[in-house]
Length: 90
Image (cartoon, rainbow, N blue to C red; front, top):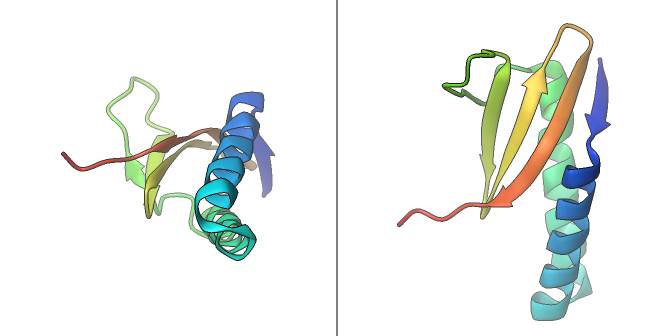
């Protein structure tokens, strides 16, 4: 399996890194990015780990990681990370 990060998801990661660095420092930013990466790597082994969405395409999943949700597509050969968006329970 292969991980593909879309341009939008790549921009999301940059925004997360910048925000976390500015508000919590280098160590926390690095720690959080490593955590996100670890979860994405877990998806390679367990692609159905996330919650299946209600989109027509049943291969779209979401996975919550602390304050963010990873939106991804699982195929037989790759995990495509579409977005990594802020998540709040209101």
